[in-house]
Image (cartoon, rainbow, N blue to C red; front, top):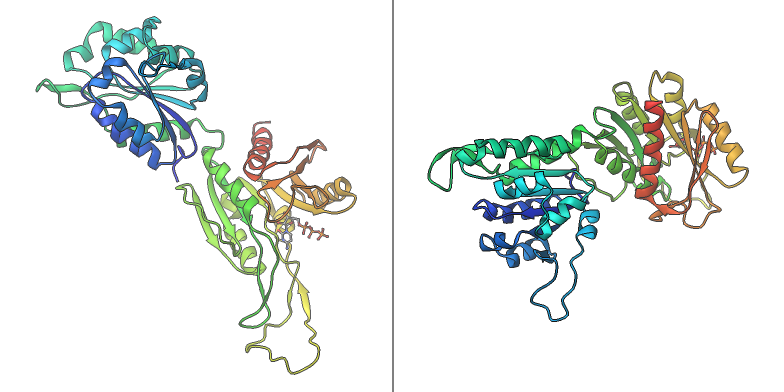
Length: 403
Ligand code: CTP
């Protein structure tokens, strides 16, 4: 999965031959999981049709302040479009539009959106070689870069005029790569490695039976995905669950038993700066695993269980500079019990979820947590999606890292 997944990307298209490549750019962005809307200058429509772009983006394409073909003409709200966008990418950006952007001209919808957008703005210039090096164009570049807009440099090659030189818009693949790495380098968890455990563990009784629990792994997987979207490299040690994550920054290590989870976590802990243990690890495991399937010959069966190793507590004992985060599922004296657990396991932060709360728990998509830090700050949250809870937890960790 790309860092662009789930992002709202507004693509601005201006009137240059390279506009035909914008259709590929829309497709690539959508393929990477982004929500794409297109705004184009009126003359850009002569280079690529709104029909192509709306079909590829699955969204209406806007090019004027009102829908002129519509008798009940509706106002296309440039402020709303600007606020909707997490990123505004203008590709191709002609010399004409760049000059207008640099000087605050606002004579079409795209420019009005540009003036009202609060998100990062990327622009990929496309023009003939002499236009590209003309002092006015260079002055537009430097003004826009001064405003904080981000230039995706044109490349050299054969231009629409037949001349050879610099001015070709970067290829859609290069534009996507550029934006991805630019986002990544500014992310708060860039350069950090995070170890996360998730899901249940299965403790074998015999070759076909096990002791397990109802953990779905949703919370741990949500944290892994959120951490990767904030730039972290994630090692996700997962018990048996049916979830999947496809993200270049997430490496999933599948384990089955508490002992395998313990081994795998210890193999990776020293290379990580943060560890978040969400797994519902079995507290007990059969003392002996029968080699053959146990037959039901008697009226009752007694299994001898032995305690598993507490993975979280074992990390608390050896942690160096790592931020260590645990979860606590409590049914009574919740805050007090969670605080005691935090101290006993030498944690920096504990996430308490109570079974008494509606919307919290194992299989739901929501959770209601209270985050308790080692300096005794207690922050209760309302019911939120597990994705939102994941970001709340990570925000706390980012604060601790930068404290
Ligand atoms: N945990 C772990 N290894 C275990 C048991 C628990 O890493 N063998 C971790 C869980 O992933 C969770 C935290 O410890 O982050 C809390 O586990 P929990 O079972 O609620 O608490 P315990 O310390 O086992 O205490 P109790 O069962 O008495 O509540």
